[in-house]
Length: 110
Image (cartoon, rainbow, N blue to C red; front, side, top):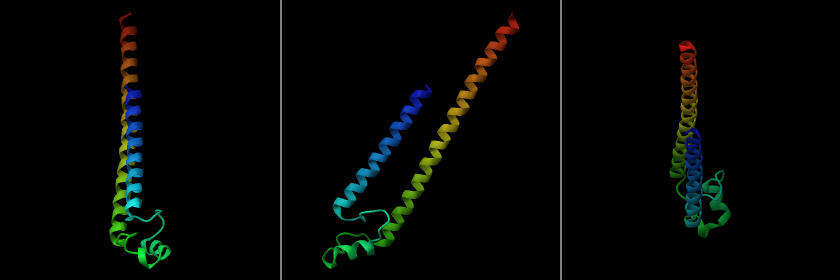
């Protein structure tokens, strides 16, 4: 059971990563996002020249808002993963407790 949960968690993380990469690629192909996370819209437009300035960037405010939302979601995902780990530990401990209890009850009867 624990192995299945771990496998599902791993698959979920892989799917989230793949979706994030696909989204970034789409944005780059459409010319709406900076080419790297560290570059700003001003720096990118300066590199492309005046003819491409409006096509290759989104408003800096919108970009920053989306980055903040992304960080919040990443934080929530990390918290969710931590809660899953804690739940797995509690489940394992409860299974061990039940196992020990059963053994003790068996010894008591003998």
